[in-house]
Image (cartoon, rainbow, N blue to C red; front, side):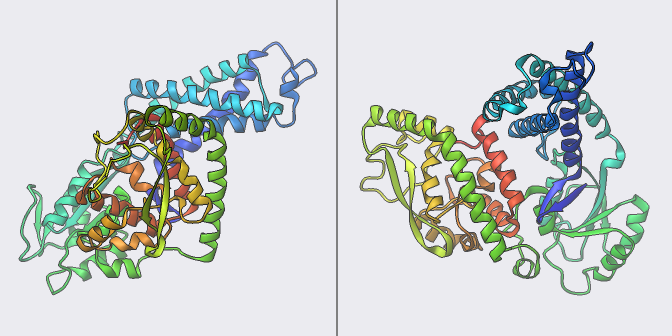
Length: 471
């Protein structure tokens, strides 16, 4: 139930839901206008002037885009979003409040599409009711059997256990039903399941018997006569999807696992677009996003600077050496969130949650990610992108390159103010956390695109609003 857009896996269910609800928002505007002026001749001479405008459709589209963005900001279109109607309603309230605020700003900037507060309120109520109805229908459909995938794992070792745990703990709209595991000769069994088949069983017979539609190859040992390569080919020729473990993790977790990664998979696989066109589009996106964010965040930045000064005086800003693209160092600019003597006479330390070196203002601006805003200047200088792997200090980069395989791959593109690891993983303060974040960074490096950048920006907005992943 997934398909690819610019190498990034997207849920078909989520995409359908987004399209349906966007149409619902457009219909709500027309329905609200009809109800509000029921006794008037619709679009006739007696109808209010705002409806007679040729760009009334533009008003409906603007409403739909803003409301879809607001719901996305509160995680209502995330692949792993599945909640009860009650929780859906509780999320609708703040997302609609955000939408109302953004629409007010849009109507102020473009007054020709203004529809009035009274009709806007009526449209909001209609849209909320229709959205809840759509969600009830979708929640019911997701329980149907045809939305489940029946899968067989090749392997019973630790890699197969990780893959099966990921499938079983999947909380997305797409559900998996694990048929069983095929144990290869000489392989240690780490699976606690009664459905373990021997390597002598025919794979095509197993798939037909249990109506399996996908086989996950979850073993590192793919050499020798014991590996059923011919049977896998037969299954694929008969319409059964065959997926290796690395692609399964990439698809389901948006990660590239370094512990089970084959170098050939990186070399011969798709992605890693570093073309001139991609670089040009990314640079244009960086400048456009930075200018917009700078304009809207300038009052917040000025207020932050005043708060830092009143609490701990100068300096307001803090510069720190970081490693950027191709291993070149640069000085990153941030609002100072720690005491002036935070690392005086000490070796560099990982910043941790509830760090005692953090000031009172620093705690707030870190939680809201305001401390990162001055890095917009690094983006203008071309040292950073708006979206990309977060840059680390040279001391930690040297340590991580020695301990973590493929760590240097993340330096093949510019670092970013925000990134996939920042919106998918909690704040990291150890080598183990860096490995988890690296697996998201590798996914971004491999699949980076304008589409993925936009998705990460929406998720970043959600992180700022809901405080997820802050330290």
